[in-house]
Length: 454
Image (cartoon, rainbow, N blue to C red):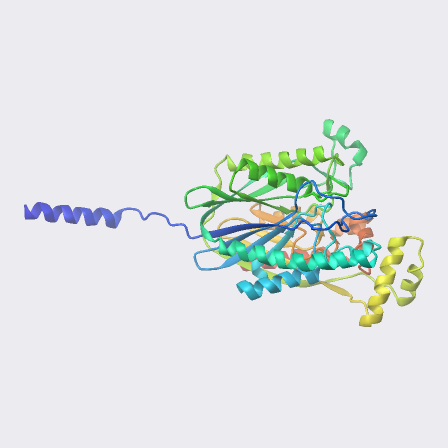
């Protein structure tokens, strides 16, 4: 009897010892959302033809946050914003608040704008494009101060909501983005029907899925490379990304959907100009995301790695004081407005800076995707070239951290046009970018990729 009992104990211990260890979830994630719709009607951003303040809303604008922590307490925070863009001072103010409250360095924070053209002017972003009175400027300053506090708060709340989580990823496809440099808007419907759309595009729809320990969907983070310019009226609206997020949250009760814009600076949703089209594109994007969620997704294991830097991008030949004085008398009000702005800067600072400190950030989510964040309005060539250089398991987010100007590839810079340099006047920058822009950005992206994949 004693022998049989001993044998059973030995067998039990042996089974327990050799049984495969149950895999434990090491990731944690937290989500939060806050309304950032202006409480007062104020100047809207995105289009140079704006001539009055906003007139109500179609739906609210949001700042949404996802906080991620690995098993070694490495952390990162993505905050998505239903805004055309934010300027460097606003970005710095938000990140400084988060550094103070959460101890996060710049490599752990990314701010991603949807680039909706039905959002407010923020800080100095595109402010020189408009001719504003004191009341307009006061409302912008007041809103920007409120925004900074709200964005910092939503990031803090995301970390308060940290929970054990399962992260997985996949990629879908949506095809409503059209290269606007190579296809006339009036011809797009016919060209689509004839399968004759020209020019490069990036139709990938990257998806990050966050589930809690019980398997319930808590977060859906997705991207697409296309301008948010379906709409051009005077009501607050998130455009197609806003409709896509609303639709996904409707389909997945209790989940927070976050959109980030890819390298869509030369891509438009075409045809456009109606709320129905914006809703349709939003639903198309939501359908693409759902198609990914219904298929087996790749579970992310491992640890978080991240890096951040600001590289000096040079401008081409800067204008002289005499040239600025001449331009300030131009019949082109935008040219004259920029010249007057730069003359004031020359007077107050003594010179015009020859470089711009351009932000680039890379996250590596364990054995999941390489996630590259680029400042500015980045043309699609960068997404294509970065994926070719780093591999298909790469996501490229534009309109991130600081939206200071269009970021053309060397090809687009040489071709010229709006994305090639004509847009610089609206951002209040002194000149076109120097031809070294693409080489410098690509070199830093590759350097960061090597760093996070050691």
